[in-house]
Length: 92
Image 1: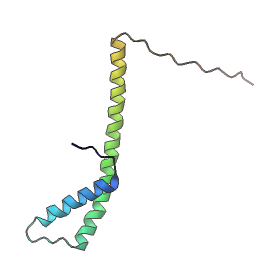
Image 2 (image 1 turned 30 degrees about the horizontal axis):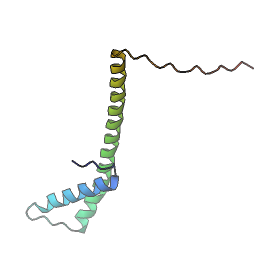
Image 3 (image 1 turned 180 degrees about the horizontal axis):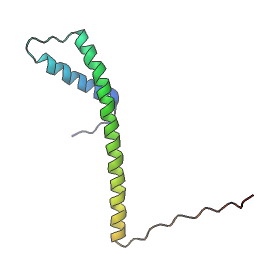
Image 4 (image 1 turned 90 degrees about the vertical axis):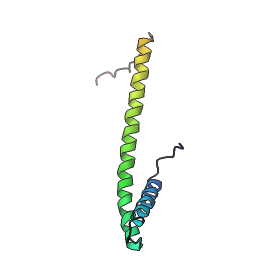
């Protein structure tokens, strides 16, 4: 399966095409300008929400991956890297 970049316009377009073709397959339904305009408007909102959720899920997956790699390092006996302490400023 080919992976695409997160693109709101592309997701919206794909959703719109799918909805219009699904509505067109219903007997007696017409796909006119009004329907296409309504579908386009709603798919923009839906696409935005879908992409927000995908981004949140990607962040969670990345954080989980980091956590797992840290745990694997601890189990393998790797020592934690110490951060250098910042020099404290003298009070004025």
